[in-house]
Image 1 (cartoon, rainbow, N blue to C red):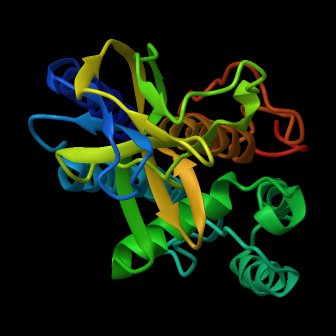
Image 2: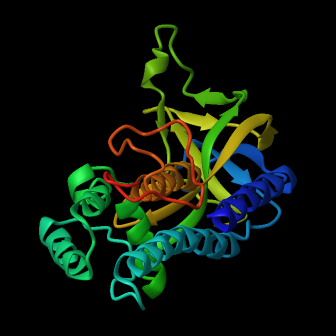
Image 3: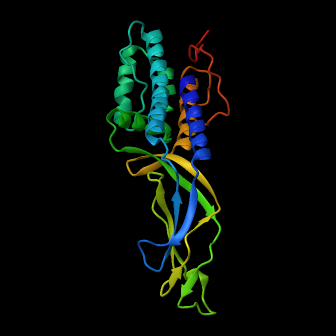
Length: 276
């Protein structure tokens, strides 16, 4: 767990350091695709090392998964003795999957109160998505299919430029008729990328190409199965769920339904409801 948290902190610092030196600037110009429209593009001097960041993130997520597996390994050894027959911490999304694991746990000698602790963190019964997402990331990483990482522009604010319009706009012109189109996603996957295209129906807009002062934020995201997961939010929520699950299963955190504000992860667990 400590290794995963350290890796995530290091990754956050690396992305922030890259952003400081990215030399991102915004340029307003006449559109090269739609005559009569204006466009704002972003330019950077070098591409971010997204692939390296992805490997660092996947390793850290793998450590979170392995931490729960190691916990279950130790519990099995304590309860059943000998080498464990149940290695992976269950992250079931269907009732049938949970019943299969519960059957194996019963055979191994897991007491009912301990099995109940595990059940509180099964995605199918808790309806919380964090462990399901962790399992999906781990499985996708094994096959490297259906998952991509990207650095996206999450916010951009820039001053308006001065442009000419032909024919001249009437005094009764309603500014709400100005149309702005944004790409579905704005990834920094090229040194030049489109931010927004602006047009006025029935008119042509003209401007001299110029840079615009701007404020902006980046966001490192994972995309899989049609969903986009901001890395920072995923790390915060998944890590919290892993810590909570580990703390609850070993008996250091009694509440398995309301997320605690802090955790006691001392190495010693308990012996269940009838401990002495």
